[in-house]
Amino acid sequence: MDLVQKILQGDPRAAARLMTMIENGSAESVPALKTLYRHTGKAYVVGLTGPPGSGKSTLTDRITEELRRLGKTVGIVAVDPTSPFTGGAILADRIRMQRHSLDPGVFIRSMATRGHLGGLARATNDVVDVLDAAGKDYVLIETVGVGQDEVEVVRSAHTSVVVAVPGLGDDIQAIKAGVMEIGDLFVVNKADREGADRTAMEIEMMLQLGKATEGWRAKVLKTVATEGTGLADLTRAILEHQTFMLAHVGRQEKGTERSRRIFHELLQERVTARVIERAAADSALEHLIERIAARETDPYSAVEEVLKRAGL
Amino acid sequence: MDLVQKILQGDPRAAARLMTMIENGSAESVPALKTLYRHTGKAYVVGLTGPPGSGKSTLTDRITEELRRLGKTVGIVAVDPTSPFTGGAILADRIRMQRHSLDPGVFIRSMATRGHLGGLARATNDVVDVLDAAGKDYVLIETVGVGQDEVEVVRSAHTSVVVAVPGLGDDIQAIKAGVMEIGDLFVVNKADREGADRTAMEIEMMLQLGKATEGWRAKVLKTVATEGTGLADLTRAILEHQTFMLAHVGRQEKGTERSRRIFHELLQERVTARVIERAAADSALEHLIERIAARETDPYSAVEEVLKRAGL
Image (cartoon, rainbow over all chains, first blue to last red; front, side, top):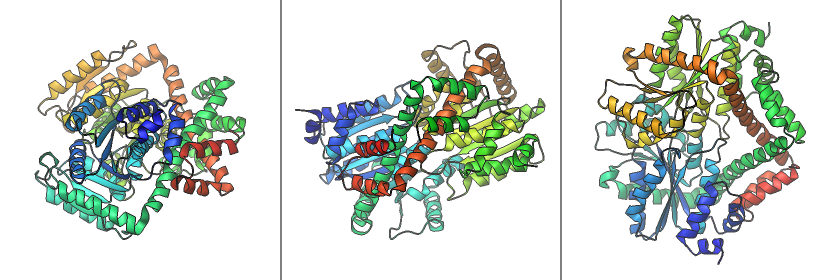
């Protein structure tokens, strides 16, 4: 039986194998992804983002528990900005795997951010598609809400949850602000700490200053993920937003938006690769870069030259 | 007198005007950047990166003071992952501006990360070029070391400084690891806190596990930026690395590496824009995205179709 068939039947090892191919940027993954794609669009995608140390992983684990209690299957994609240098992502993955290791209804995958020219958002999207095609009811994407790529990842979810913590200082608050407009739900985690009510109030205030609500009023909730406090409420709020999305906005609209992002991401990657490939073929590229470094030409003129040669 | 001439003569308002054009992605900035480019390559570029709350801004301010004391002029680019939603970057900018507002030898610019399709690294590079052409001896780039784009920004500096703080927890440590391999210098800031020696030792150990040193042995220093402690040593270490770079690696090599990144960044942006423009012209793009959303085609096939139409 081929890889795609196995994945569609929910074989976790087959899914893991394709995910590794995706992460390595292997061309072999493409035919499989093409075939899988028409079996996607069934999973409900929830993105969780927040600053480092806000307890996103624990929250994700707890939400998974709640969803499992409701009989739903769950895929988790943890986007981890760790380098291969320390293997942090792999370690974290192992620890979390143990927790759900006996549960075939949960599949966890960590994605490390690596490589120069992006591709993280594209790879994450592909992994979400694999989990979707494999029949997971929910896919939870967990990412650090600081970098541009990471925010992009969460933005393409059906429901976006922004996680904050009391008293992390101004620098953190500024970062939180960067993801303010993407949140459907806001969670003040570690709410047993001093200042939780104030942080919740500040978020409420920022929300009132912000965008018009398009029918959905963003909620602010408090949790203590390590103790499971507030998790039932948070999960209920996620399901409420899901119901709202299906009834009002429709998955279709958000689906089109998501398709647009995925398409652009992939187009950008492929087009650049193709143009660089061509330019490299006549060995002119290296010479051009040296000329930029020597100030004999400038990056803008060099790019124009390459575009012209590529007939663009 | 035209904009470029004014910038070359060090007019800060002219520089600020071009920077705004760069940030807005205005096409008008391109001819100016082309002309300016051959006046660049003189400034020494230092990148500072670290997790939120590590005190990068204060460190940057203090290093600036030290460099000013040595009679050097300084440009600062603060890459701030804040959205226009709260104007955090602008506020932070104002506060810091006041500190150096009477000093014509210092120019500070904040860059907010915004927009879908990247461009932050490209815009930051362009702003560095403006400061370079305007005659600043040193350009300090300050960024949160978490996102992929942000790490890219610092990677292109001549000297990269990675900032850590004692006791920020495992989540932070993992992130720090992500920038471990790009550091020429490591700073444990807030070193008056408990655990500073341990953090410094951990970094030392990770360094020993890591890459071969290529002649430069990465240093670990301790600072308390708010009190100015350790700043003279840090500045001396930056100058030492500069001397090392000029003598051994040569600015040329790092310059070529930097040119390569800048070129790729720009190529990616321009090529994608061009291809999307073409596809949009025959209104086929929107239809294609809808077909992806409806699962009538998949992103990979769609991108292949667009590439084919663009003759790539």
